[in-house]
Image (tube, rainbow, N blue to C red; front, side, top):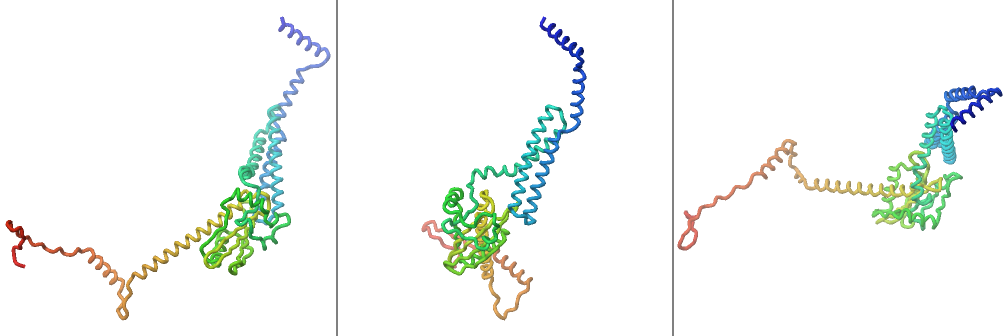
Length: 359
């Protein structure tokens, strides 16, 4: 009964619509046709998502190349990177809007929306990889082996741009955070003279491809030597300043290092890693030097073991020396002849041995 009543009501409403001149069938047909037409065209949100994500990626690559190889100012490069990340974020949002329209209206453009989403997230993966480092390490950009009296920048302080970090050390608060995060950053004492240590440190700094900006040789106890250099990060090329102080006497020397980033409040641990790298290279240099000294001493000892030819005696040829050496080796190998033992006779009564023939 209820089903029959519903059918009668639908029939009555349809008949009333026909009487009044409203036909619902053409509307449904037009709606299907419009959906089919719209499905042939991709949604503009998907297209702009893909375009914006690709443009942001190209902008990041352009900023890296110009900053690394074309001397683009670091503040400008930072702004370029920030604009790229904003564009990547907008591309991700547009991809989500495109997916909603594709689901509801059956629009095309799913591949464009997917490309915008993937490229945008890949661009965000670069800074996201440093999030654990940022959370684990303190927000400092200046590390030194002597927080009480850190080495001072002289030549590099004049080269720092106006928008860069201050060349002055941060003080006790920075020293406290450094001691908690990097307790191994301490002065390096070398059992060499201060002059030799100064030369070793300069050689190691150039081997690490640091750009040396200033060098002051040590003048004795209380008048240390200084080496100022600039190191750049591998990919982007951010510049970090390094100053090395060498003090001591003729018996031993003390090396103090200070590494500071020009831009940014968080160095991501780069400065501490740079100090460790310098000390490790110095240790390896000393090990190679010691190994070379030992091999030279062994060579000298071998030369001393060779007997000298007496004066006036003719020099032997190579063939004679070779035959003489073989003869000596053969003489050493021939065993000495054994002495023949004579059989004794035994007197059973006295127990004394007598030979069979008189000696």
